[in-house]
Length: 398
Image 1 (cartoon, rainbow, N blue to C red):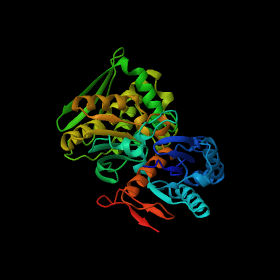
Image 2: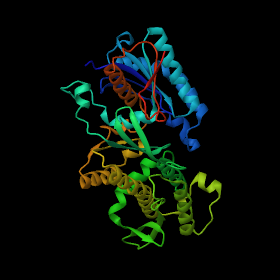
Image 3: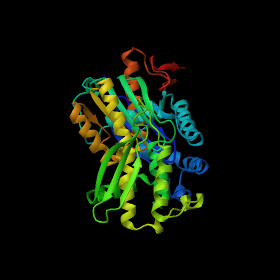
Image 4: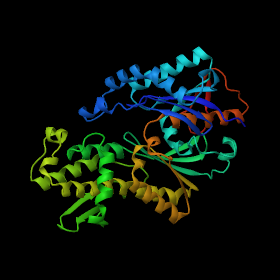
């Protein structure tokens, strides 16, 4: 079975990314950061993201092909993220992909961004030699699997019955886990994005605190106690007793704000939240707070994941999304997998946990393999798929 060669493009948010993927192997991955444009605003500004994508898209695609030592005439298909994401940003990538597809008569494969994250753990290093082709390699995957997608915009649990057949069994009802990290981190003055900093501080400081998760009345709480000062910090773990697999993170920011207010004995205005109140807290207090934020956020995630594991008895768990760069999350999930004899998969590099075109290329090549096995020959057109079409094969629009 042929390992398809695909040029992939992702402009779903603030990364202009292009990649060339052969089968599951990453031949190139180009994604210059836009962070300098957005950092001072405390989040991504769609109009600035669109402008940066417009300025960079041509050069990024050319560089991806050059680094892969590939000509666009030699690729089998063009893949692009069509959503979800920022509409203004997505438009640039989609238009570029359409242009290349028409100019070079290549199939255009539209990939759901979340499917890309779901399949990101199957990407292979260029230096990694796979004896089998993609078809043979995928035969060793044990299904059903649970996809755990945790990013700045999404928190979802996906049941994978077969490649291309997915059930969304849990999702956030409001904010995502990544949003909660960023909102709490902004209060502490940790900049944007705050998630990596919170994870870093929590990892460094965890040995200096005592952590306890306990039930109180109808609530589940996490308590962190500094071993030296004996100062206590407490936050609720939301949705612990909801009876379903959904998440809610909007209340974490509110509870955290109230916790900070109690420490500095001052009500925080909106301006305080935007500018941060790190100057009113000691470094140790900030580190303590990072531990309790992480435990409250990941505590909810792990409660739901363990419940899903008991219900669906998955053979594998696949991690995807920016928040899975957290070493603590991988540690907790690994322990769960060992307890229930489940195989764990996650991307080989943290560069593939956030938005990137490699995962889009991998998803596209798995799609092409799936369609090829159904005896459809790739040709000029668009292969459409989304998580909303869960009970049918990808549709083909020509």
